[in-house]
Length: 130
Image (cartoon, rainbow, N blue to C red; front, side, top):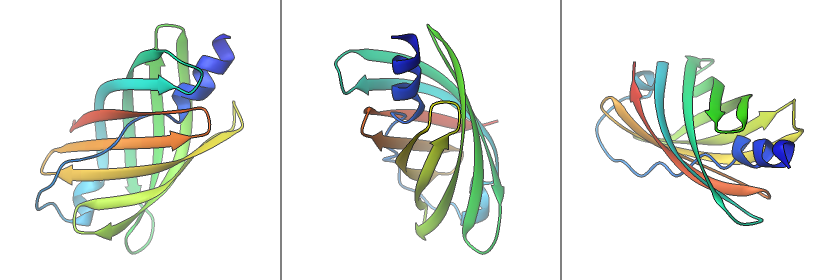
């Protein structure tokens, strides 16, 4: 059960719904915050995360994610691409749990909203730039 919850949490991280005038380079750096995960099998888990973004090429960013919930912690990686001003989309993956999910990010100044959806759940995070 613990591994199932962790796997679900890994990719149920939330919907970014902010708007604003940040440029793509504004995503670079470390962001932290929390949110809630809706598990496909039922139930909601609170999660706290710290995400580091580094520019790869052009409008592409690599991400490294560390999250904690009441039953433990997990790590995942991902890649997002700027699709329009302040909006990024991409994929996240957890080697530990062999699960992946789609991610959407909206940035407004030093605040972002992040969403992830997979077959195991979905959720949202509100993050601030550290």
